[in-house]
Length: 510
Image 1 (cartoon, rainbow, N blue to C red):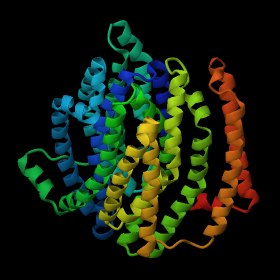
Image 2: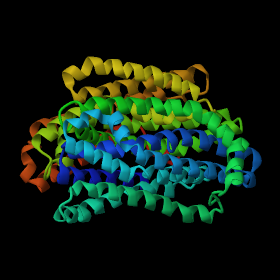
Image 3: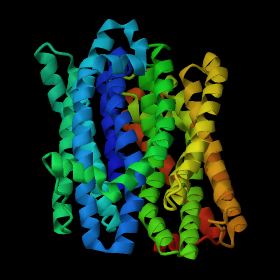
Image 4: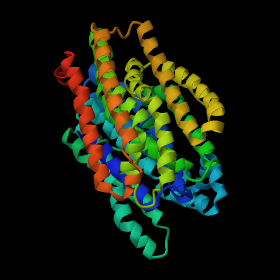
């Protein structure tokens, strides 16, 4: 529920930003500036750190009990807090070089490039907040307290929404660029996300105690659990880094294309992230500690059953979403973004990018379930090797596709790469015998494919026979048609599943 609320408020945030600022050199500047701390956050916080921290925490709790695990938490918190503080200082000072490395093409517009540097300096400390949020979320998820970590992203979205709505007009009246309201909203949101975790940790008696002083910091770094996390973070950092390198290359390429290209990709990415986060991230968060605990206790049967449940949910929910993105992208973009400063051309260009992402949606979601199957066994090297090969493949596809499809070629390359990545991860789990499909897969797949085919037909007809872009001035009419279409599609899809004998209660109970 909270993950859904996060995605909904995230879409509201993007809708408001698109309406207020459209797609321009300045929106490209904000998206690049926000992407820089996010890149480091995914490298050092939610990415490599979480992948290493959660299995170590689960193993410590299963083998040594809660008291020893609390000491692990204190040592890791101390090492992490001082590291991200230093990183934030360096990031603020190095902002011009970071912007150039991420998107040198912004120099086509001096105003946009300068804005990106300034906004990077404003937002880089966001990584410090989010690193500690990742630590807190790892602890709470390991104790099966999923609600607070799932709810915290809502605070970022609400903060940015309020800053856009109230602070942006005020800045414009004072003679400043109104887009500078966005980094203020990001920093306030980061602070709130960390603040809301503190009471939840305190109630469990797990509030980390960050050590001060050389002796305490040295002890934190030399603790065996910290060293184990660092050892696991090495390949995990490379694995997450591969994805971020791909993002870095794509942003760099997009910055040299037509102004607005970075923004078109970002708006499409936000729409694509809605099903990715609702399905993939939520499943990954729930599965990761349970898979790690099953491995720690040697319960291979439970481990395989959890993976099977996750993969069936991926197919059940991600396949129809992928079909919708492929045939219904323009109506979705029109209804969500086509207001204010967002033009007809922006709709067209964002639609092209969203269609490219839609090709790989099933793979993008499946990776969130399959990769934890390796991480739970503290095998991070295998997903890293696969990610490196996929990175090379993605860049080869960029060379072939971008000259013909421009920014849409970047999205399509990512989608195709995700399909290869997911298939490779699945094959690896099958070959090593870690995952054994439960009975009934062929019947299940046939039911989902049939229902998806009928849903796709309905969405295609609605996309072709209604003037979604032309209805810009009839916003409520367009929203009404969208609601009816989505409601009808949902009833059709789940009705066909029910008629063919698939009972969803079994999934919900599990």
